[in-house]
Length: 102
Image 1 (cartoon, rainbow, N blue to C red):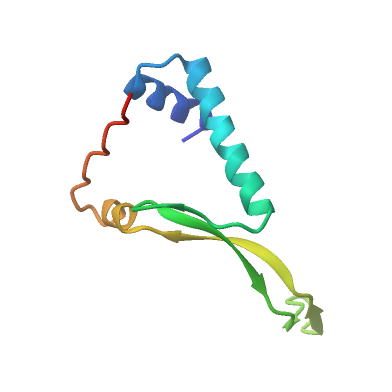
Image 2 (cartoon, rainbow, N blue to C red):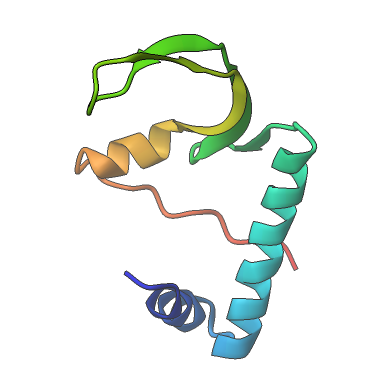
């Protein structure tokens, strides 16, 4: 699914314009990116959590030559799946999200 297709589905469900939906999606993604960039976890209860983890330095092998190489430590973004998303992936009945208060 492309981003445009996703925006169209969300726009239809929320009855917002495609332009407003795309702007909102872009703002959400930008905010997640900013928070993760600062090293903060970004949890969405039931959906999952974006988290920054540190991988330790380790020794690896170049698959072409078999020669050992040193792989430096680095920070990576991980995503831990929440229970509702996990259930949806397993084909279990999804619970409709609560409507936002106006």
